[in-house]
Image 1 (tube, one colour):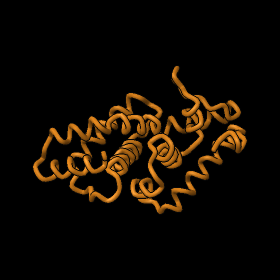
Image 2 (cartoon, one colour):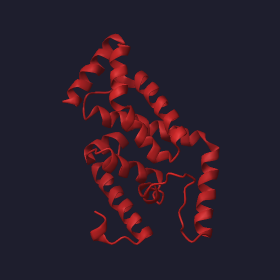
Image 3 (cartoon, helix red, strand yellow):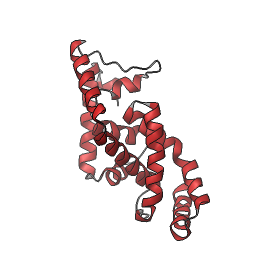
Length: 183
């Protein structure tokens, strides 16, 4: 079981600063963290940078992992916090969002992202705010339970469920998707 193995690695790291054990944790979880951040940022280079920052923060904060809940849930919380801190620091981010909102209004809700590899999922996620996008990705792309998302975001489980419901409704409404097509 990976979570038990993760907990053993965490114990080795905390007790003796075992960099080999930390390298194993990074190897096990870097793809999931990077993909999570790519869905949040919609920018591959930024997501890769934030992923590195996330693991640096995880190294310094690993002693705060209590073993309650899954390690990946804790790690995605670190990734989400890293993303939010980056967003707050970036004045350019706010300008881009404002421009995108204005462009969407001018194009009659024609959502577009500047990339040759825009997936349908990226288009669907583009209508969500950062919080909704993070929670939807944690749930559906990362496979976290409502409890794990609650732990990662410090939100009550009921709030997590509400955000997922509202996010799905926003996607359905924005793209005129019928209930039987989207679960």
